[in-house]
Length: 324
Image (cartoon, rainbow, N blue to C red):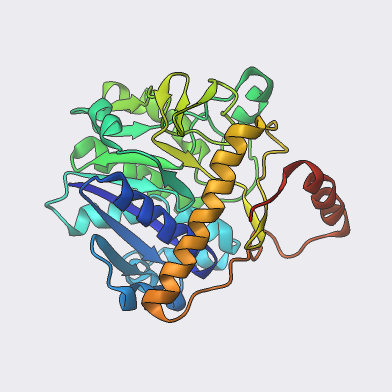
């Protein structure tokens, strides 16, 4: 069985449950541990009582790690969420001794196939990470980190625990949504891991995992019999970072800063993802009697300036998508 963990609040509830549904559809044997970041999310998950999903209230994690109270008071909400990235898998390994490997997932991932090839590549090693894999024209973004905090595996051994404990201490001390030369949020700390952990660490080579807006151009995307391939490898999961939902039939795909993907794979991925979000909302309403609106709320920053609104309007022409 694969043990995964993620976290989300009411704003990402439909994304998180869509991630869950994609894991179910992949056919793998798994448990998804969800850190519920607010009471609405906790209540919904407990009422659903889904197989293969365990709910951890945020208050439980905060009681276990008292230093979170300090962090909660000196950073923004999104920065506080970033701070939780190492704490959740560490908490699970400390409380469930039978778990051999815990894998952190971002809630806006979607699986198109089994994660088995990723675990095969991990083998007997202790830690697995995925590079951003920027194409040459985006290499400047490596200042924010060589690796993306989207999918990391940690074995329940000395190396895995040491890595998580060091990362926890770093994030508790400093975890801000700004470039600080040697630090950026929870992410740039990973740059030192190859030197620190050597052969205990695997940098994933499978091209079908970790595909995202910033690296789709690194290897060619090709549809074969309605299945996506990445540089010849079957797509395992895609990271739908930057998607903004304005209406159940209208999204911004967030691709403008990274390069506009060719229309056919773009529609297959992004229109397909929105349809899955709509299916999740219908499924949630059927099973829970209530479902949140399929519309995003901004939590990154304290407001949207006029300059930001102009930038959003400009980008809307190139990254807006209508999906019926």
